[in-house]
Picture 1 (cartoon, one colour):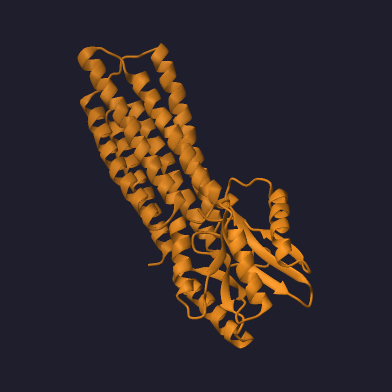
Picture 2 (cartoon, one colour):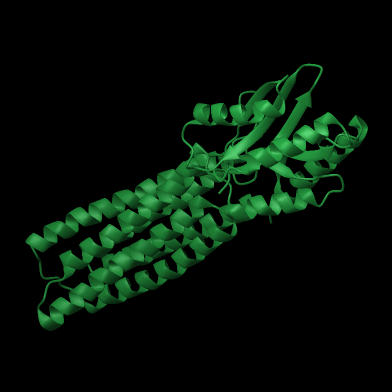
Length: 367
């Protein structure tokens, strides 16, 4: 079963569980003549909305690419997660408002044996459902499922807190309903904001993890003829589609045919292993006993001696055109790129007085 099918199946389980729980509550509420239980049953039906949103988002994300959307519709999943996170956030804010009201105007709860049984069953079902959906969300890298599972868990926690505060009130006549509800509401609001941050960051463009960056570097460096991997950039167009680029160092003795074969192998492996549509650029390493190779060594050593520069690459020198170009990656302490370029150009110029120097400041797009 593919990823999308598993997400849909998990969401269907969530819908079925909420509908069955709502039906159970409705029957018990009608038999016990309890309006509160019947209304809670209606609330369970609304809880199924998170799963419905996940299914709709997953289905829409599977639409094939078209002329206006050449990278497909995978990012719709992020919008689904945002909507569910907003629902959780709204629930937390509403719960906080009601809890604050109870702090200033406490009310004594009244529970029957029937309502207590219904509440306990609801808590157990919601805890099991929430843990299952959230675990599947992490396995399938689905922010929408994670948010939906968290929504169910928070429902269970709120109900459990209400039950605990009711027990304390009945036993010791101390009202903690409002205070306990307010504390849990703050936790839910915080979690809602965190759930919102993940898909929003994906849409804005988050950095690549250091682990994944090192993995890509290791895999590409393993190819014969590759002598360095630089400038890794990845863009997510949904959990299944990534567009990226990187540069590799090769010796200047390689032919265009050999380079073509090498880059083709790299792009094929990146797609097969990681689903990345990768563009591979090439930097040539000067070899032999000539001025270009000597300049390369001196320039690279001079620039690498700067503590604020974490990487030097992309050296290019053309005596015919009279230009020398090199890329540097500064750390985050450098905020004035023009000043850095001016400083480095002045240092390099004496090494090649007859050439025009171009210092290109690259930036690190990974963690």
